[in-house]
Image 1 (cartoon, rainbow, N blue to C red):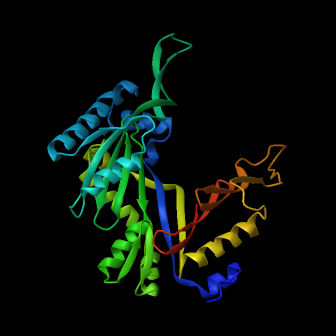
Image 2 (image 1 turned 90 degrees about the horizontal axis):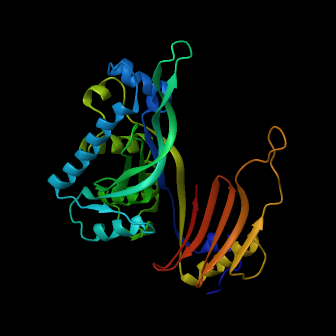
Image 3 (image 1 turned 180 degrees about the vertical axis):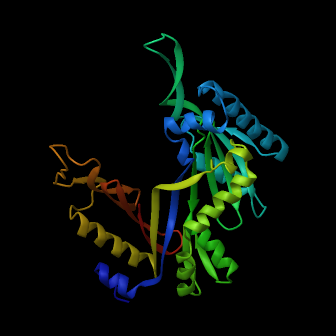
Length: 345
């Protein structure tokens, strides 16, 4: 067989499967009414009836929430792991996942101290009477974060991270490829799995339709389901009054996986991709800085990175493109045939 020598030739003649899917999504889980000082003041004075809004009122909520987490771990025989500096949290999750046999449940709860946004009290003085009074201000602090690493019947492994301090903002991390593989299996579509996607599929058109079904409503339903199962910092009365968590997306990654008929085709494809993007030979590491300055109002340049890099680790290269806050990563995976991946966020 004659090996194709251009990107278009390989994509036209040697791709056996192509699947595009939401990959990882990292979402803010927050109470919209408690993200500013005035909303916090109203929570304690208007909703809970306190005379003054003060961080002293937050302390018993925080202690009760942390106590409920420890009780949850003790009663459910869920390991509570203290993460250490430099430890990869995903590695710990994979260790626990290897021995997990249930359809869904909590793998473990991890604890780590991290800097986050909090509210605190400042003492201020009335200029007329000279009396002091508490004043709520936004600040930052290093507080305990609790990571609930779980397995869901529909989404597979995911985690939700809660701050242990008011207003108890959280993060939700899900993997769309894991969701798609589980849904394809439930639909009776035969496939061979990659670590994070599909390596082969008996019905590519149906598998793509499965991937396309993942939407905001399904992710929101996942959050609501597990908020009912996990310890919650706010009371039922708080939630009934409208203090419910909402979702926003600070980071979203999307993947395009193209399976090739043999590894050699993948190597040809990726060498051409690198050459067409840089044309700088075979470096171990190259950074090409975009020669442009995007300016808004005034002399200040737009923030963010503008660069293209090729990184070679061993014999597996990857191409990285940064444009302001967006990134593209292209790489070749040969452990299960040859899979060309295009991940962008």
